[in-house]
Image 1 (cartoon, rainbow, N blue to C red):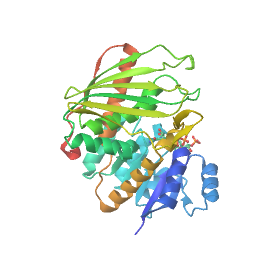
Image 2 (cartoon, rainbow, N blue to C red; image 1 turned 45 degrees about the horizontal axis):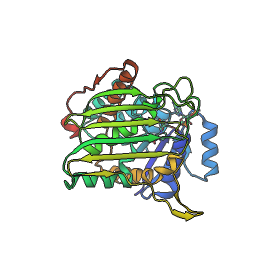
Image 3 (spheres, rainbow, N blue to C red; image 1 turned 180 degrees about the horizontal axis):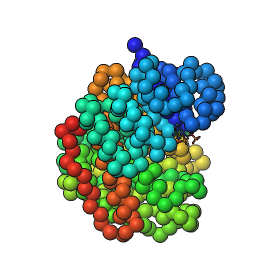
Image 4 (cartoon, rainbow, N blue to C red; image 1 turned 90 degrees about the vertical axis):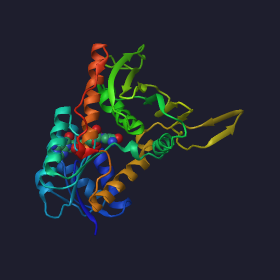
Length: 336
Ligand code: NAP
């Protein structure tokens, strides 16, 4: 039987996830949607010839008898409320990042889920489902390279809109590295320092760009992460792990190698959506399968909480120029 999904938020990524769930993936159907922009949502359903009905209240959608599971793709500040309501209804919920906009909000979700006694929450950290990162993780866990010692990584965007300012390099951009590197290394972070480099002339006046984030893990691994969101040349994700017996790097996305006019060239992507398009499919298919099997294995509410605490520490480090400790309670047995 199909998993009957209700989606809250029919904006950019909501529409993409609805198309995926309805037309691409197997085992699910979108039966209901909600958005504060009703007109836009109805237009989208009509354009896509989808049968889902519009429900005026997100809480009515969550509690609808024919909705088995929820996808939350509304704007960040509304996530906590909808995830808590889904847990209260005893329904599995896939929530796009951030799980909540504060670490305290994420922790309230962790507590509610533990009280419910069953894992119901998956957070939309899709990089864990990227083929390249999966290969990198498999290589590291094989033991072939010994222990990881250092990680050099970079997150580069060609440009960002004018509204991208302040702490957004951390909260909107580096947040993906925070989650995926912790998963890759299977190690928690203990401290962070953030250093700004000479600003590019292309950054708007309220943005430090590029910056370097220096993370330290519990076992002593050092990570240096470059965030450069006006790099001009393309969307480029790099990750190199230096281990005791070798260096392993994230593969480049597949692209033709061209020999022409006395040049050897290849393309670099310029759109993050294309770079991770396959990961979103794999991520949501895994969520459907896990939800139907009643066993959640994806990024958990605890992962969402740990990322929020780390992100807060990065912001404090950026603003103070100091090395900031990253402290959380021990991982509850519920999440091990
Ligand atoms: P978006 O285009 O602005 O879409 C958000 C939608 O939710 C809009 O239609 C908005 O309506 C609606 N909305 C806002 N508050 C609501 C509420 N209280 N109840 C119901 N609907 C509400 O944003 P987006 O780019 O799709 O991003 C949505 C979320 O996904 C964000 O948290 C973002 O960080 C996350 N995201 C994750 C990734 C990833 O790589 N994992 C990528 C993109 C986005 P209005 O337009 O009328 O405000």
